Image 1 (cartoon, helix red, strand yellow):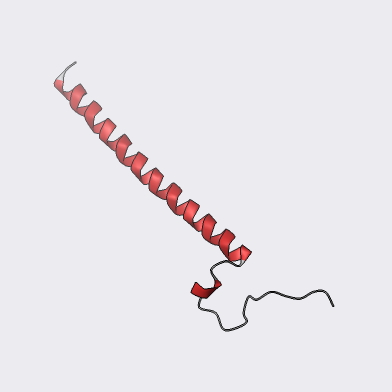
Image 2: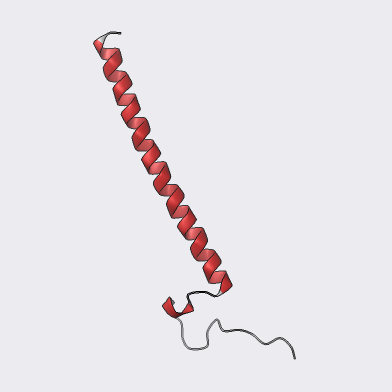
Length: 63
């Protein structure tokens, strides 16, 4: 194998590793966003939201 082929192959491997790290970062961000959306829909973590008192409380529909 000549020198340029080895250098080219090493650069390709490094680029693939970087792409893998970026992909893992995006997957984690998407998972965190999905978790946040689910927690919001379930009503968990209302204390951390910037909402007024009574906003997002339980609704009594028994009447």
